[in-house]
Image (cartoon, rainbow, N blue to C red; front, side, top):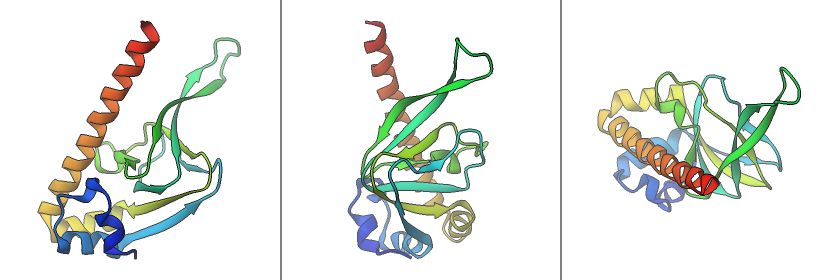
Length: 155
């Protein structure tokens, strides 16, 4: 359980009313990450939605190494900043992680387990709709950032 006030600090949760914030605060857990700690791994089931409170988390994607057959290199593609969610695949079918996330420095995150979210969503379908909308907006923001990076790389 965490404080409702912690959630209220961030625009991501701005559409939620007091009761919805309370429901999330009751199932949320704050976790401290050590430097270089892997939080999620690409290809695994997305069993939790994370939200960065403090520090930095970097998303990586594996790229096949042209020099060594069968090996891969992790390429950083996005830095998560405080106030941003990650592991958003937890709310998007097929609920498989599309990147690996690793902390860069000591960080704090909020973790919302999918099973707990599903229970909260059955009690308040509007909460589910709002959370999915917020996650979709975050995904679109990342997509736009990726487009800018690709344009810069090819310019």
